[in-house]
Length: 257
Image (cartoon, rainbow, N blue to C red; front, side, top):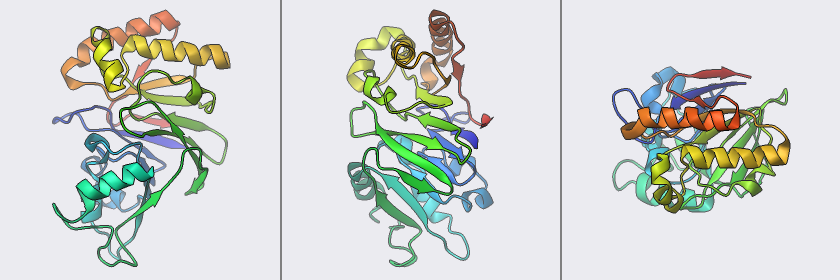
């Protein structure tokens, strides 16, 4: 299984793109930095997009994915919780700002097909077993456990706050992709907004270790561009507390499992 980070930040600049992972060139986890990262021929290989939740930074490039039509036209399945898909359709894809790609070029063969899912529903997409697992955020949200045919797996949280104990009971990935958004001094705001700081992440990973006896490889995404240098130092300090390396993801990082 090959995983490429297309977007690793929570804001967009000339060097930073919004959240998106690409699995084996065909499955996207979130769509914040999807089309802005890929040449047209690579976009046309995508078969499915799995949305963690409806926030704009995780869904932005769905419109351009629909606009960059392949010839002959093909359909990309977009999976998400019913609340997620409802919001994405009403505020992004309903045709008021741009063309409705869930109906175009035809109702029978649209560019994007919305597919509602339920927590813990097992999906089989492009030879991958995928399970959506609820995470703690300000809107209904899931992370995705993605397992390849050989048994290797990743878990991508998308946006999440603290309180992941129930989630940890459901997943045992080889690699954990998890967010850190704010600095330790912002903890009160991050708890309210359901995001993680480096110290909050360390606490959640210690809960994982207490439950499973180990911590998997950890790659951190969703860093705030405004505080990135400080966050890097605080993440390094959190790794020292856990006596392990906490890796910081970046655009273009590729992991082979």
